[in-house]
Length: 388
Ligand code: MLT
Image (cartoon, rainbow, N blue to C red):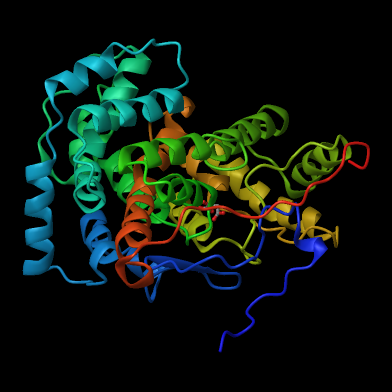
């Protein structure tokens, strides 16, 4: 006998399916009070592991550093090479595309030229090839030199960073340390986040993994989703320009109140599911205090963390007056020597793709006793013109 798990009323309509259950997610979940868990592990606990170990954990549910992980990594290394044809096709894309358009197009190119039309195989191939795909996209878009040869032996993030032809001096050790954390925190966020959901919707029509992920990345590109990390940085920069290097509590609050009065958004705050400060944001704030406490933008962002929460809490209509992951990620990328905001959503996508492709494998190959979920086809009510 089926049990009722959610009542749908007319008030549930046109709310972006907010809170309405539609399926199972076998990789992660988001608790409104406790935040993100990969399987049964709170995200904070996983920050003590390598990105590769967390990737393997998300994929297999095994948190081990022994033979299971080693053979998973060996397999990824064999799959990592991107063909010359794919690289040339990415390098031929018009440079005036937005980096997320280019990323999404690059996924279609690689899928068309190297895809196996097998969700399980393509899932692993994509995870393995992504560092090179993303490095090619960023280098080409930025007009930097072509990526140096991929060397997966270096480590997933280390290989990605060595392929980026970042100009000038950058402390690659510090940047890699942050990017390893960034990658772990962004890998997955439950089944209903827009990019994962979009990817699964596209795959439900049996489009292949690359097309599904390409569409998911288009969803991630929106300002209400992955592009918010770039906007949150702009917000911090604007506050810095107005408040200077040593912002005090009162002036920061005034800055936020002015924004609200002008009906502008307070970027980096609020979340569709969370009702506390996003534990991923808390981890970033701790990282910032430990590694770059004196960077002017970090100081401003830390002030905004407190002032934003205080001011937003005054409005009872604000469901989540707390910082989310985007509040600090762009500021940290800038403070750690990667001041290229155009690529921040692409970095988010590099990480989030892992969770998305794993979720697609579940829905296509495992759900409903292996039959897979049917094509997504929700019901809409007709609304006659004139009543809208
Ligand atoms: C996030 O990482 O917070 C998201 O992808 C947004 C969400 O979970 O809806």
